[in-house]
Amino acid sequence: MTYVHIFMAFFVPNILGYGGGPSSIPLIQAEVVDRYGWLTDSQFSEMLALANALPGPINTKMAGYIGYQQGGVLGAAIGLFSTIAPSLLLMLFLLGLLMKFKDSPKVKNMTTIVRPTIAILLGIMTMEFLVDSYGGIGIVQTLIIGVASYLLLERWKVSPAFVIGGALVYGAVFLGG
Image (tube, rainbow, N blue to C red; front, top):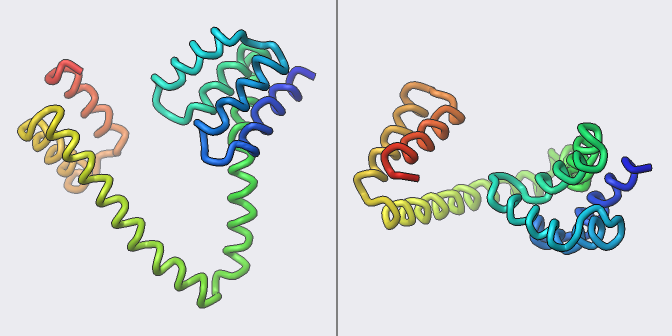
């Protein structure tokens, strides 16, 4: 029964929590603190702070931690799955609709319109990152990281994971990060 409780504790908040992680955090707190009593309010706030400090989605980190705490490795797997299941089910449904109407002129027009919009949004995000980097570490360091990343990714076809790892090491060694 514990595994069913783990599943429900994360599935329901992620179905009802429209807007992503921040909107479902209070719902998860109500489940794990008030309903099941797995954590105290203090423990939940400490776990939330730790989840915020680590990279990645907050809800999956909390589900993995609490699931592991309550049901071991299987509990962690169930917690993680129940967190992504609502999005997965919705994406499968929407993909089914998209595939059904893929030859429709309206769907083709929609994708034609969406692609430039995404490109513009990515460009804006890149400029914001560039401005933040320039303000935080200066133009020289920004150029070194930018040019090195470009060459590694585009010229020498190095995996992005290694480029990101290298940038982290560079930041830790040369920027005191």
